[in-house]
Image (cartoon, rainbow, N blue to C red; front, side):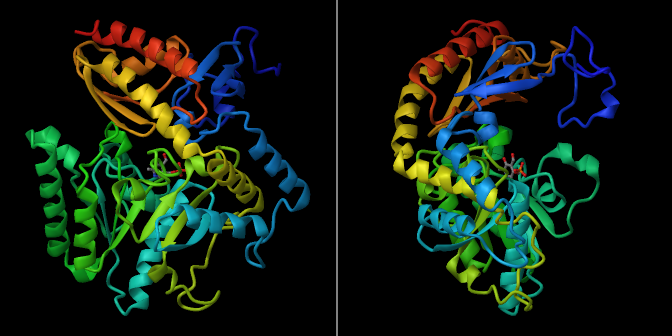
Length: 442
Ligand SMILES: Cc1ncc(COP(=O)(O)O)c(C=O)c1O
């Protein structure tokens, strides 16, 4: 114990001396170890993680094959300067990711995290248009309420009101409303909302001037809207609109990618191939910081030699890092060899009807693969205890279950290795929390 720690609390008392990722309170957890889908905190309490550590640890916290691959790489080639050369793990991972992606995606650029991959997608879109003699095509459209990251460009695309405190974002970013918002604000029905939202995007492109618009970047499923899953034809409509106006369609699949939806990527789930795909989170299983931009053949074709005007450089010191690539390669190999698509679908078939029964009468469930969002109804404003989603998440945490709750929604994203018994435990605790916060099911 350091001088700054007290006997009662594992936390240092002088918090200002430390750097915290999350706001600190007396309820903050200090995790010390993890196994399977469970985390242990310094006070000895165990937590069942129904979020895969925010869509990341899909193979659990003690995945031998991935840990071993990283360890082996650590002893062989822990780092190479990307400026001077490549490494085999990165090359193999790029190929493995391309193989998982829909036809037409032929290259991958490996980076360190989701935000970086969104930044890279913006740069690639601009480079693509410049290389085709359209240097003025620089604007980027994205959905209100989509989340795209924490670096400046990706934060600018993030169309959430709570990011406005950082001041003006990247010039040329234009936000458009997703179908889910039209449904909520005006009670527009799902099919109609897809057509209307798509038409509004086309009108926005026309109003901004198609000669100025480079890309439309969207999450296929908007997770910070409580998993807003679009109707089947919405993404297809966006594809047509982008083609009509020579605008690149970019799917941010950082949440929906790598098997989460029961398909390799949401692109395959919805049958729509974007020009660029941002992938991250689960692709290393959480064993190293890793993300990628998967690149359509026509976009990859504009990339020139290292120093030329069509080069992607400057890149990142840790881009295509051998350790992260070894983790990613082991994760993709496990995903393929272990037939995890079937496992995701089976587990999803087990959880979905049970979860639906639990939520029924207290909200509506949105579900695709192992991605769940529940929009809750119940006592909210006036309780002084925050939005209903947050309260349900807190009630779960108190009982040792981690899920996400914000506004009027909660989300769950169980690990692919979750057993039926662990799923039952998750549902039981969630049921108790819903009873406490929303009242018994009607
Ligand atoms: C859809 C989406 N895009 C981008 C990001 C940013 O990824 P990272 O936090 O790895 O930078 C996230 C992270 O939550 C995300 O959910």
